[in-house]
Length: 347
Image (cartoon, rainbow, N blue to C red):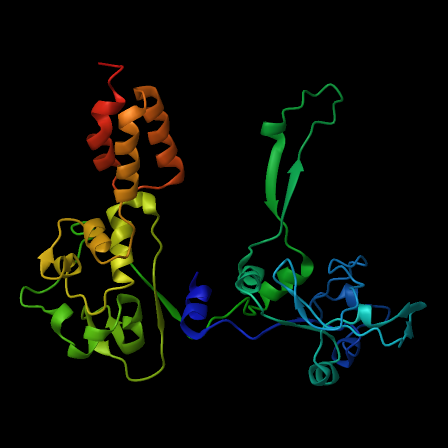
């Protein structure tokens, strides 16, 4: 989510570049002891040699570059009749992996270059980095053939650490990096977070230049001093802010986040709940009046019309359908307004 915050700020990356070490590099071979192969020295090389092609080569010939069904591009591959012999196989343009000639010549290894043509490719790029550890499932059984198998008790999930990963971590190499850094901004309802401040403090009103920026943009212009408990104007570097997520089921906390993402220069909770000079009692109503969320008027009209000719059991099913598929904002309000019509049969 931090990575996608950078994409939201600066736009999607242009190129997705992957690089695989070449075990025949001179730097690797000269460090081997007599009789050793690169596979014997995980401290020198990290490699992957799956002989099956997981990238679905050979690809198809095509005269132009097209957008594929899986959001990855289908690159132009001309059927020009040219063929080459590689390790006893005859290959043509269908077997060419997207590449950069300058990088191949410089680094002498497998380098794959893909264009980030869609948001799906961008998400995959970051999931590629943050997908987590390799894991295996194992079961430990008694050698006795009469052992009663209990799959739940026997099941174990373990982290799989290959020699290459182990050495990478022992050497304390970076697994990933992010620049500029992303600051996660917390989200609290009134009275739900303990904050200490001086009686005469006016942090929300201290910087006139902050009237035109959003909450998530604040770290770009100011730095938080945890000791002094105050913001100061940023002088160098940069940082991107991201408001932590909230689910619509969280109610007011979710609507507070909606307002913070759209209302610039807010100075207080009450200020966020104010629109056109009117202070609304809830964040939901304020967001609704600003047009940031849809109101439940259409749902209310639907139920009101159905009350005229539907039996209570049908109204109950309609109400349940509304809850499942329409995601109304004020469920309690709709329930209270139509409860009498839906409960005629119970009375």
